[in-house]
Amino acid sequence: MAVLTREPILAEIESGRLVIDPWEVDQLGAASIDLTLGDEIRVIQDDPLPIDLVEEADYRQHTRVHSLASPYMLVPGITIHGITRERITLPTNLCGFLEGRSRFARLGLMIHVTSAFVQPGVSNRQVLEMSNVSNRPLVIHPGVRVCQLVLMRTEGRAAYQGRFSHQETL
Image (cartoon, rainbow, N blue to C red; front, side, top):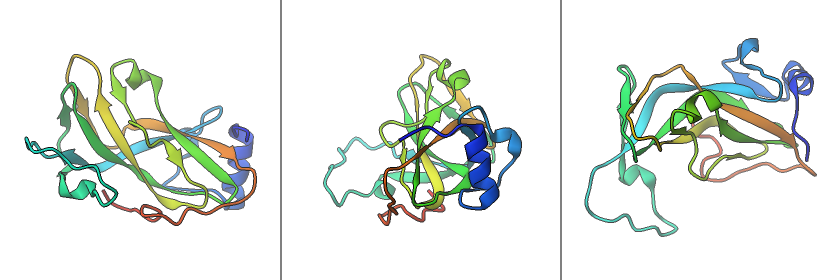
């Protein structure tokens, strides 16, 4: 597998095989595409009872949706779920990784806890597992380019058909 740089990414977009919607050309970097935070987040409910991590566990039973009509203060040690404004549609021979942007990482914002992989063949908005690992609160705003998508060619073709293959909301 090889990381795609600016020109191959542009060629994939221009051919229609790779779709980023909405898309602005200034989101494209040397070897990644900046993605923005959407208008809502999902917050884990404050509950002293443990969450049972079994195969049937559903994050929606332990979280609530929160609008970003006003900025959200993410306190240290807390994880929330964000979702990209952009819908990502990958062909079956491209996959990707979501990475935080260093300007925010240096202030303590982690963009993914463990789920950075973007499967080949998806057509969805990407959920971000955003954590504050600093010692100060971070104020979260919608529309900010909080992460970047790094694309790679796969060996062979595949299309993810799992539980989150067509997610549009948190």
